[in-house]
Image 1: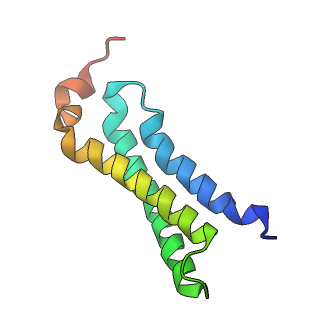
Image 2 (image 1 turned 120 degrees about the vertical axis):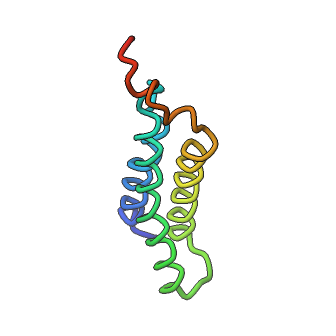
Length: 98
């Protein structure tokens, strides 16, 4: 039986990366949140690739969890940064109305 604590790094990094996009309730902070999501995906992808290189089996549950969480976080953050350029405008960043 695998140790349940082996998944904690993946969960912590996934929460850090994914929360950047999911917790952005105000449009003025979406650029910051998307950047945090992309940055948070890097350690997940590195851990997933490292696990793939060290494991005897091609895909284990832990390496798949790392790669899945990192990929989702990277795609969500990149989508907001690339496909939504209106989120980066100075007008949105300077608007302080609630």
